[in-house]
Image 1 (cartoon, one colour):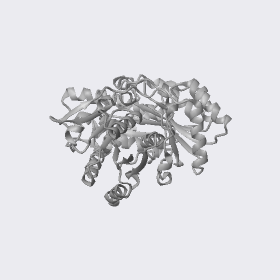
Image 2 (cartoon, rainbow, N blue to C red):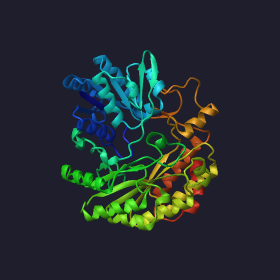
Image 3 (cartoon, helix red, strand yellow):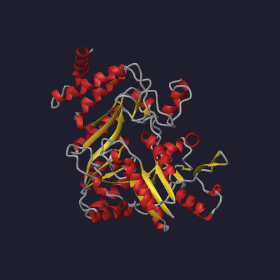
Image 4 (tube, rainbow, N blue to C red):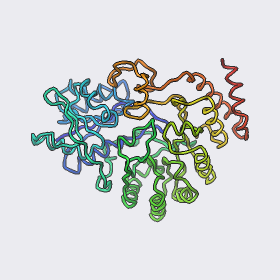
Length: 458
């Protein structure tokens, strides 16, 4: 069958824009079974040519099935694509991704142009769905699927997560014009990077994140041999890329594996520079030194707060002392320690905010090493979302398929409390502090400095 996989418009992140790995894996799995696959990434299409680009692909390829990926920030664009595909021709439309996985029934009830929703990981479910459609078989045996049947929404039993990641083909990068993307390592030089992922799953329960619900609590790893083979393929096929970004939720989670992988990178003379995500409780001098020797130049941490009280409310399972220790090790080794922060979490007090400010200053983080989020973003099925529902924060009859009439960031709800304006002013003052006193150890004076700046702003 001819299958068209589409990525809708998306906003650029702090890391720029990379080709959609999820569609790359779906495409390569389909190609391996003999299906004919096209990809269309509307992230890189000019907005004024959005509809023309879509219609041109539909007319040229004439797909028999269309698959669309859907994240919360881009859901309205995904829904719009489904409508436009159905207006072109009544072909089956399949949607997948974290947002529709968590809102399957609501989405199918609201968006009639979507025929099927693939839940969680899509490689095996999509293959079985296509086989069933080709052979006219019942869909009840296709695990991990939600669909409309006789006017009712049906859901099959969930499929187990893929345990052996080595059995998956490498993502089909050849189906994307990779040079049109501008994914880069978020450090001062902004080097352009190719991304890959070497594990799936998250064992943690951070209240604002749904990674564990999407990919499971058990972390599944690709073997070091598999990772080296993919890096070698990138080196041969895309010699213009000297930098990599490992997109694993927690690349540093399993120390022996990281050290083994670093040893293999060195042994195979894969002279990439690279960055990754890590957790502060998995950092020590040995693992950072091994990573540095293998080409690591940046580790990005979800620090979120300098207050132990707020960290506990977030269910982060880390402390401010652990944060300080880990980031000091990374910086001591000469790597960039990038840190993200969330202000305004339910239960946060003014003193908690000041604790975060003081910790940032004590660590000597440059403004380019900090990611600021002044209001928590509320994603479906997170603990934060479920807790706020109980408090009546969401309006009556709230629906993820309808345009929001509450504070939002890129079409996803925000939690905004009465301290929000004050936090914004404090954040601006803190950034100004870094500009004026970047190279001086004045962290003890930061609260007073910020309060002075605020008094001038109000």
